[in-house]
Every structure is written in structure tokens, then in C-alpha cells.
Amino acid sequence: MNIARIFAHRVELPLHEGSYKWSGGKSVSVFDSTVVGVETDTGHVGYGEVCPLGPFYLPAYAEGVRAGLRELAPHLLGWDPRELAKLNHRMDAALKGHPYVKSGIDMACWDLMGQATGQPVCTLLGGRFGESVRLYRAISQEAPEAMARKVMGYVAEGYTRFQLKVGGDPDVDIERIRAVRAMLRPEHRLVADANTGWTLHEAKRVVRAVRDVDVYIEQPCLSYEECLAVRRATDHPFVLDENVDSLDMLLRARGDLAMDVVNLKISKLGGLTKARQARDLCVSMGIAMTLEDSWGGDIVTAAIAHLAHSTPEEFRFTSTDFNSYVTVSIASGAPQRENGFMAASAGPGLGIRPRMEVLGPRVVDVS
Ligand code: MG
Image (tube, rainbow, N blue to C red; front, side):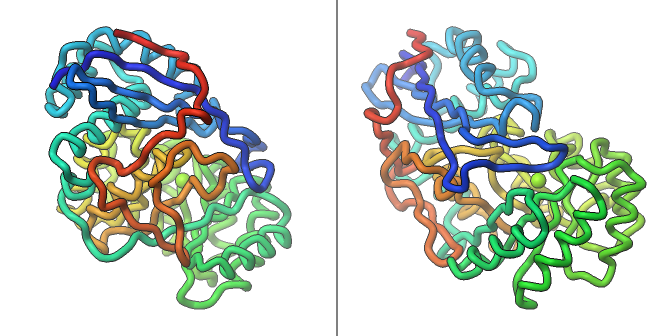
């Protein structure tokens, strides 16, 4: 089985809530996602998806996915998609960096591996732990009362974990955290994710002002050093995200005890192969994880479900069902949230089938 063609479709994913806002006034109303297909000489096709959180979150942008695929794909024709370590080694030799470009190809090759073996990807990633995967709901940045109202709605839908988008005016962020926590029950978990938006003095003011509140603090500042300083100034459980984009950074952060939970995003790390490597290392080191991606539709959600479901439950802090945030379904068979949980498909591969009528024409086609 060898790769004969790599292609991609561009698809727009509008949001049910109209827009998604986070630190520094950043917002997206329609996500630009890329569905990647890897076709073999045996006639099998595997699918992956890459959807950056706009061009201003991580060093990634939607058109960059497509440009990167055109650059990288010719180097992979004739290679066996089931030899995932070899394929990743090849991708890293042919294109330095740009992990998000590689993520969709790697995901599609896991889908192919599942089809070739008749196994779901979660089985291939280590096995299915437990019945389902617990989800969090991200609460877009708005006025404190509006965020509190939104959280109540999502509690009613069955969510038990919430991630508040803060990283704005620190005084308003303090109100946001207090207003939302007041709506929650003790067993609910609340994360205040600043997405690098506070300067060091702002972060220190916020954590001191909410010292009596049961809340996790995620990625308060831009640099790792600033985050470490905040971490050492607070006893809130602490999550690192944007700074941990490699095994090097994961090991460094572990060495400094810089976090209690780490946020692993599939495309930030370069695909399921590398996310699994980081995940397994975290399990070995006893670090809990948020397992997710930057954004996406049904295919990314399926990949998240397989990665999370193959992780021991005590190390899964939370995951995301991005397909429930968007108005367009790009594939059948993807996990559907039930009471704040989802489950990986039991079918072969990722267990999804793209809706070709939604995807439209190919924008990348290399054979
Ligand atoms: Mg985050």
C-alpha cells in the first residue's frame, strides 16, 4: 500500500454563536478548515483535517496549510502510509517545522492504517479506556454577566467543565471568573484561559484577586518564563498550552514543575503520531492533559476522540467537541456529544465519511 495522491478541500465552518472571541480582541466568525485526503494505489482514501484558530493564535494560518501541502505532498508519493514513524521522519526531512501542515497528512494516514487493519484508531493508539470522554465548553469572551448566562446554558446541556476566555482587561477578567464560578456547582471545573493575554503584573493581580475561587489558570502570559513566574506566585492548579509545542518544551516544563495540566493540541504538535508520543510521555510522568486541537469540524473531533479515548482516564483532564460549535457537518460518523461526553467510533480508522457535497472542489491535488 503506497501513497498515490494527496489532495485537499477548503471548507468554511460558521459558528452557532456567531463568533468566538478570546484574548487581545481576537475573534473568528467563520473558521477556514482544510480537509486532507491521502489516496493509496490500492484505492483506499484516508482523511484528516487542519483548522487553525485564525492566523493570530499559533504560528499557523489556513492558507498556509494548503501552501504547505503543495510543497510537502510530492515528497510523500510512493511511501507506505502505514509506516507512520517513517512517514513522519520523511515529512520532517522534506519540510522543516510547520507542524500544522503535517498534521492533516498524519491524521489521514492513521485513518488508512485503521482501514487496512479493520481497527479503530483508538485501538491502534493504545486501546480504549473507559466508556466515554469528558468534554469542556469554551466560553467566548464577553461581559461577565453574559458569560455567566452562557455557562448556565451549557450546564443545562450536560457539560461539567468550562474554559473561560479571559486575557482581557484584568479587572473585568476578575469579575468574569467570579461571576461564572458563582453559577457552578462544587463538582464543576472551571479554567480561566488567558491565551497569553496578560502581562506579568496583570496576571499576578488576577491570581491574587481570585485566590479564594476554585479555578484553574491557563497560559496567563506570552512567554514560558512569565508563566513560570505566575505559576510560582499562585496555588491555583496551573495549565500550560501555547508554550508547549514540542517534547523539548514538555520536558523542560516538567523539570521546572511549571504546570499541573498540559494542553496537547494535535496540529500544534504535528499530528496524531507526535501527539501520541507527547501523550504517552505525560502518562509516564504523571501529567494530566487536555487533549484537543486548535479548532476543527467532524474529522478533527473524531481524531480528538480517538486520542483521548486511548488515554488512561485519570490523565484525561478534558477534551473538546468542536463539531458541536459549528453549523456545518463535514463528515458522517463523527462523535456526537451526549450529556457532556463523547466516544470514539468503534468502526475502522477514524470512523468518519466526508460529505463530499459540503466540501466542494479540490484546492490541492498532487499525484
Ligand atoms: Mg488554551
